Length: 294
Image (tube, helix red, strand yellow):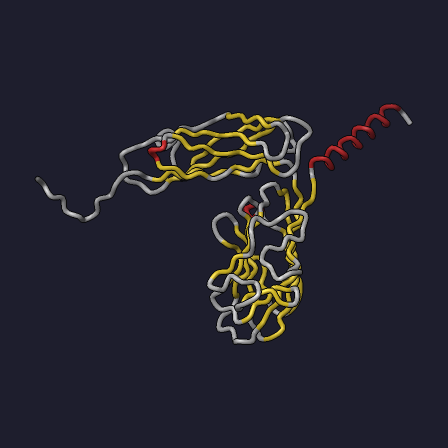
């Protein structure tokens, strides 16, 4: 075989193994194998326990509970349950689960948090399975799944069981940025950028900039263009981003801007996450209270 062909194959093989080293798979799973809202049966842990709304907080009592190694819903009207997970390092993610309606004709909605509201991704009625590929805005540090009624007037004995809730995520090295809210008199807003997901082969840099949402650069805050962050390549390393905030005398609603990641010296690093800055007003509204002159 000619040396040029051997060299080309070695390059392809090296690229293949490099790709393997910077992309991995993690799972978040609850098989409801014990009567607890804190089960973690995957490779990674959820961000917290299941949290009920308009219901008891017990996994062993109420209309939502764990029974026979399944999550049972009965007479569900005006009740829901949700659980959060961190998918900020995910390049892609899939949700699967099983369900079985054992009595009645009601339904349950499966909803995912999209950054501003819960989005319905499946309706559970009858028996079957769900297999859903998450959209980009459903993968963040604040990802969440919620089960809520999809119908009304549940009868006392109408029942649906859910089991084997599983998120399977492909992750890479990534940078996550927190959201920050400050009063306009604060002077600055400080964001934390965190290396999440997988380690990289070595140190790397990330470029960032600010962008207007409802706030205006120059009058509400000072724009940043061409900012650079330096990371050591290890998951958990953090860097700070400081934005100067302007104080004015105008009465106005809260205004927002974003921190955007624009490039990296390491092409394996996922840059899809953003941070949102919120500036609240500090002017005092007196309302209709009359002033007394002395």
